Image 1 (tube, one colour):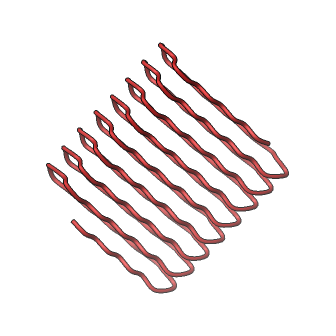
Image 2: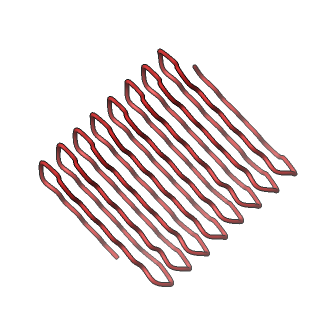
Length: 215
């Protein structure tokens, strides 16, 4: 199954919903939204897929708020999720939930040039192989909140959070729990005008743990 949605130059609100359920082979979902005046809502649900899943969401040049929700559940192969947000004038909320995956999971979130508050939440649970989560936030006027939860992973876990050029406060929470291999967590904070709170909790890891925080 391949689903491609392109929305360009719309003077009103946009809602894009893609639900894919019960697929024996691979699933690819790509959503591209550009130059929209009013709010953009993107919802992607992928459930019970036999082979690999790839979800890409690109939102660019939106003059209102942008909530994005991506839920991927019960996949028999690898999962890759990429969310790119650029030039948004109001609040951005990105929620990614990945649950019960038999192979590796990669989640990449990039947010750039936002004139309002940002919330990024990534929850990954029940993965048999490795997990990689990367979150990059740059040039934001109001507060940025980042929450990462990784739980019950069979192989190695790597989490990277980079926040740069934020004119408000930045709370970052990273929780990694029950991992069968090594864990690496890197948090880099640069050019933040208000308070920074970084909380990292790592619990029940069978191999080495490395946590690097640079502010």
